[in-house]
Amino acid sequence: MVLKYSVPREHINLQGGWPTPRLHPAAALEQASARLFSGPDIQQLLRYGPGQGVPALRENLAAWLTEEYQPSAGPISPDRVLVTNGASNGLATILQKFADPGYTRTIWMVEPAYHLAAPIFRDAGFAGRIRGVPEGEAGVDFEYLRAALREVERDLVLFGGGPPPGKSPENGYPKIYRHVLYMVPTFSNPSGRTMSLNDRTELVRIAREFDVLLVTDDVYDVLRWCPETDCGCFGTGAHLASPPRLVDVDRLLPGQAPFGHAVSNGSFSKIVAPGVRVGWMEGTPDFAKTLARVGATSSGGNQAHLASLIIGQLLASGDLQRHLRQVLIPTYRARYYAMVAAIRQLLYPLGVRIVGDDGLTGTSTSAQPAGGFFLYVLFPADGTLPHAAEIQRVALEEFNLRIAPGGLFSVADDGDDGASESRMARRPRAFVNGARLCWAWHEEGELVEGIERLAEALKTARSRRTVLPGRCER
Ligand SMILES: Cc1ncc(COP(=O)(O)O)c(C=O)c1O
Image (cartoon, rainbow, N blue to C red; front, top):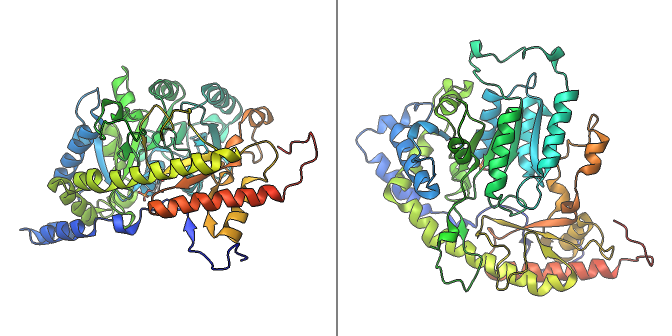
């Protein structure tokens, strides 16, 4: 590695989406475990637990979710909630019970996509049948989605068009969806965007029309703050209310099917610690009950039993809520402000833009709340810079800085044999010429230094670039 500096500097990683270890509530977890093990019935902790999760915990979870989301359709009942061992395995479980490669036509991923969900779809038998749907300004490019759904329905004939050979209601699979659409609609990983209410509503309508299961990783929702440093709302303004999740919209719109067309996949990885491997899902009561009967849960009960009880203690004591309000949100908010300010000062003059930045003053990048772990920058497409993968290489090898280049978030399976040429021609790819940047791992000063190094990397890459007059290479 040839570093630009005579004294090699500390590595800065703006790629990884992990919380700084000092933010893990280790002491609160230790106390929660101690309280549990000093209780009257230790054996209850150590036995297999109920498939859907311990009822008292689901009650607490449902009450907390009701408080966070305040759904217009009314309080969330515990029978809508299932305890999982994290969002990743939650997704795998959904596919085990509600999808079948012999019947489910296509897995759609809003693109740029959370790249680590794709292997979960491939494991479930959908390799080569995963397609991207462009994100659009406010959520999803509906024209594209409708046309692509119609195309697949017209062209893809599975097993002669007959019933699925494997999973049937008689052998424990009461509902198999024709399509699955995966997305992170709030504070998206990777784009940082939040889908508008209009788009959420339209998506539920399309899902009902085409029998699509909408799977939303809602793992960043509660990490939200005001994008304006000088707003004066102190984090409590009405403009910071959580948007209804797709699962809320599905519940609210008249005519919901028994299994519904949306499931919310949540996780404590981002708001407690990734190692606890506990999450939850919310769907209709039929959906949640059926998920609790997936094979690996039938054999042995809930997959996160003991760890979920520790998290349950955090919820019941209010430690989790306090940790969110007093530690995580203030820390991430300050880091976000620092990072956005540094990008505006150092990268904007080089032609870089933050996705969703509407040019408001202050640190605001949008009229909506800011939150989550990530923002996304686009590099200028004027031919003066090499491609994002090369920028990433220069940043890493010469400035000891890691960024996540846009190509990582492209749906790799899309474009394989069978993708229609006209659809591929309509698929916008501007995001590939950008990068995702994360503020969860480093402290403010390191984030600013990371942006300084990125500015240096861009200048270095630009200085080596020879562009023939009048020629743009993109
Ligand atoms: C969108 C999204 N879903 C899921 C996960 C992983 O969640 P879990 O640790 O609960 O499996 C992540 C972690 O980066 C994520 O960003």
